[in-house]
Length: 310
Image 1 (cartoon, rainbow, N blue to C red):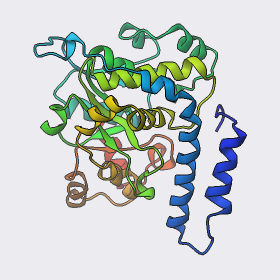
Image 2: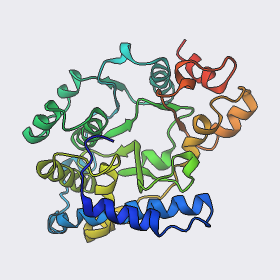
Image 3: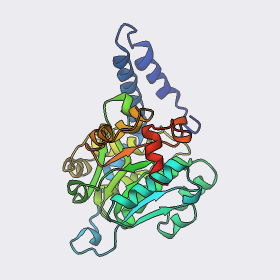
Image 4: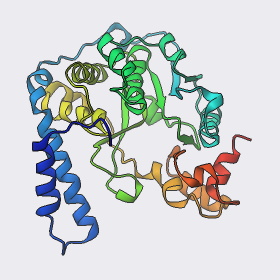
């Protein structure tokens, strides 16, 4: 991927541990896990240069965290080109949010996003110069939106099938843990950021935000596609206060949220099977990038999902 940090030391560690010392007689899944672990070790090693920064970050408990904070919470999502320009599957996801989430939905774009947040000059400068990609600019925006306003972040490709349960809504800080099933998107990411529930001014979110801003103050390139996730992992593993705050969050695996589209998008739709899969969680992650989203098979689950916008 373009814009990745070209650290020879980091790449050498990945090649040696993830490939050269990865026995070919091991199973495919075992070898993938070793490659994943090598990536994590190498990239966490790169972040050691931020160790003093991470240890110095302090949690800030703002007035907005106290009982009685009155700002109306929203569901935030972002499609930089504007909702009307979104692919059909993304529009279906937006409609599913309106149906199932009992909060106002804000579909923000490259103009309206700045009605809700302001970002440091160094981030805006790197965004305008193309050093920060659209995907990773969205990562920054979701952190800032939730820190400044609280509420829900949902990726534009999150398809909701039921209301958000109270065990999520009642949390001050909640996101899913990355799954272990590689077929369902389980990666080296540690956590997932496609759905997040945060209270305004949450102290752990504030610490994550501070490290993210510091990273982009110092770096002109990505550590990894999951840079946001690596920063969070390094924070909670190397800052005692962050670790304590994170320890109280329910740890729920993301895998059930990735089953429907990842595994069964081309399968024939049936109400019974659809209910069986979607009944295990409240949303399903989709994508607009593959053929099944652009031109779904007639009668398939992908077509059914897209039809929910018609």
